[in-house]
Image (cartoon, rainbow, N blue to C red):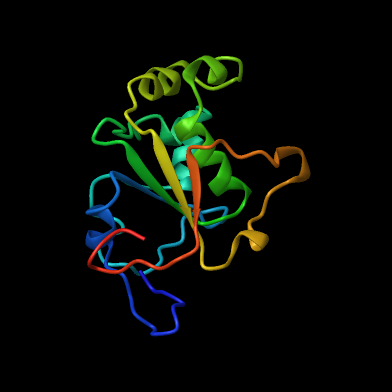
Length: 156
């Protein structure tokens, strides 16, 4: 994954997957835009936010997405816009809270089996640039905004 780190290094997706159990690309596009990262369309456990949101909102084109959220406790959302934060919230919010929304039954069932407990929101800028509508200023404590960079030796 290209990095804007001063050293100009790139982070292979395989390195990120060693530290997280799910990766969601949240870059605010009306259609998926491949980022040119090796493995982004072939590795298991990677979903675009458009697919993921379409799936939990019940869009027919994403009915077969069936994300596996049972492989571990940590996920990373790459992106820091409203959609990225919505995805992060859905991953950590209790299913009882989600039942009060219009989320589809199949999504609620999948999320009820999720083992995700922590979500890291990763963006290329600092928290002041996080796109967050005024009415949604409180982030669950399970969300972490990462202000560092990845190194192949370990998690941020």
